[in-house]
Length: 142
Image (cartoon, rainbow, N blue to C red; front, side, top):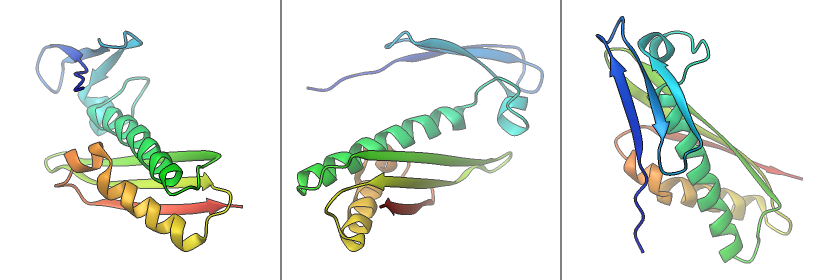
């Protein structure tokens, strides 16, 4: 069954001097301020499209890796993924780095690396961002 998720942004004013809010409508978990300076300079307590993409990518990747590991008979104890999305004004998103640390009993380093790479290639957010250079740093915790 397909699902649709919704977010809404209200923006006032021009790009450089304006500001807005983005609300996560489907979940209702919050409304967050956005502005050009929070995107291109310091966050200063506001979010940006790139931070929201990082949140989506880190959670999607963690789910995909967990699913793949469990399907291979080696369910993880923990998976922690940090997504760093780089934005260059005038160019856009220039890259994403996923850094994952996982505790997976009974898996070899090689099998973990293969599962980590497979999750990077196949998580739905990675696929949606296929035009962006995505790199992966994977660490298997003892």
